[in-house]
Structure formats: structure tokens, C-alpha cells
Image 1: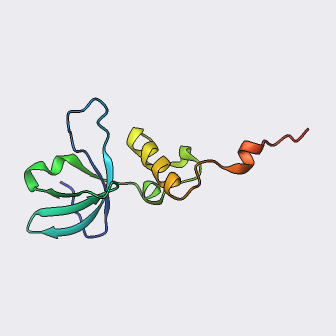
Image 2: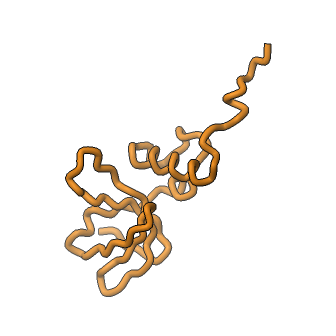
Image 3: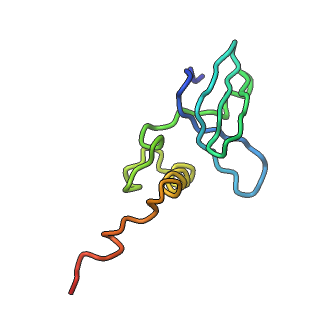
Amino acid sequence: MVILQQGDYVWLDLKTGREFDVPVGAVVKRCDSGQTQVLDDEGHEHWIFPQSATNIKPMHPTSIHGVEDMIRLGDLNEAGILRNLFIRYKEHVIYNIPEIQGRNKF
């Protein structure tokens, strides 16, 4: 059982039954009498009830704000990589420019 507080970041596994189901990042907005309200990365609100609390897991701190080098992700899985790319896309830092230019200028 995960104990959550307002402001905690979590992985939310929605289990939609689609071909490419991947947990999405979410932030806890409210915790009331066993029910938890979360806001996912896509802007959708979800209520998590105690009986379905198995679909929510705490997020590693490196996945909250993203990292430049993805090997440093604490959640080095499909969801963690996709969320890191999503964060970098929103911040317009998809690529590290010095690496694209190359190290050898000759």
C-alpha cells in the first residue's frame, strides 16, 4: 500500500486495454478518506479508490523534472523514458546541441 500526500508524483497505470498501454505520470491533487485525486501529464483528472490502488506507484525523483542524460533516470523503463522525452519536448530541449555538432571539428 502506497501512502500519498498532496504534491506527490506517481505513475498511474490506467489499464485501458489498448495495444500500447504505458503508465503515465501524475501528481496527487487531493487525498480524502481513502480516495485520491490525481492530475495526469495529459491534463486529465482521475479518482483512485482504495480497491484500485494497485495501479499507482511512486515516481523516482529523477522522473519528476526529467534529466539530460536518460541513463541517469531512476525509472529506466518505457514510461520513464517517454515521460522524460515529453518533459524535454515541452521545454524545447529535445536535443543537446553540442552533441549534435560533434566533438571533432576536423
